[in-house]
Length: 286
Image 1 (cartoon, rainbow, N blue to C red):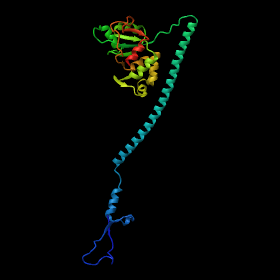
Image 2 (image 1 turned 120 degrees about the horizontal axis):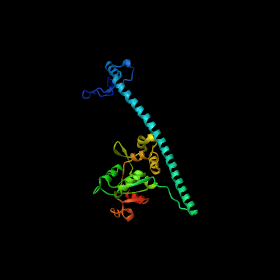
Image 3 (image 1 turned 180 degrees about the horizontal axis):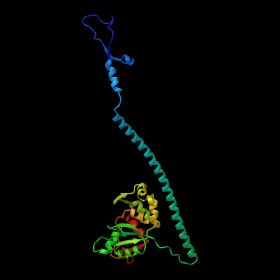
Image 4 (image 1 turned 60 degrees about the vertical axis):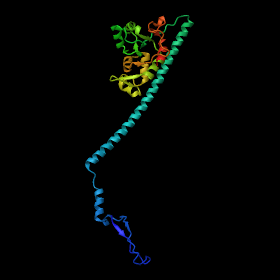
């Protein structure tokens, strides 16, 4: 940097030999044209303005391209999530209307039968909630194997199964070890939303969003939790996929405890078929 000195002191300064002012120094602003710059400053400016290496330019280009791509992906993902939320809301409203209409139709048929002095016989249940209430002590190999097939490997585990001739015969074998019945829509919904975990690659994962459901069951048209609940309640065509997607429900010991696990429900105990009374037990175990 160039340094300039002020001019010599004028006559106002003292002229005695005891006082000799030293020259003041200040930096130059260097605001003139480049041609008038000293050689060492020109070299410094030229070194600062030289070209950036190609490798650094490529790295910067890749970083800028990746940032642009990530921003585009985030925008697309936000749009997809918004559309998925709208679809899930529409499905929830649709399924709720179906449930209400079905209940009103059943109530109407029941009132009509009563008016005609007939007996209304509701349709048989299609889904059963099975809860294991006993451990492994004094258990024969056959009921032990059936409990494994039902994925009831721990006490207080619960699963939803489709009722047919085969499953009913299996339930009769393991009756002393389980309590089962026919759950309501409200009970199934609470089980899925409160104790529902996904089984992905043999891992128990919480269902934190509908993205997980869509990734695993989107190929069969199940894209949200409401679809899972609807398939389980109505025993739809994809009941097996929805049921296997869910990890067995891990419940607590029932509030106020059991009455007598050694006796059947019809004898005042706990094990066996409870029909619609299973809803009360499931509520106390949530």
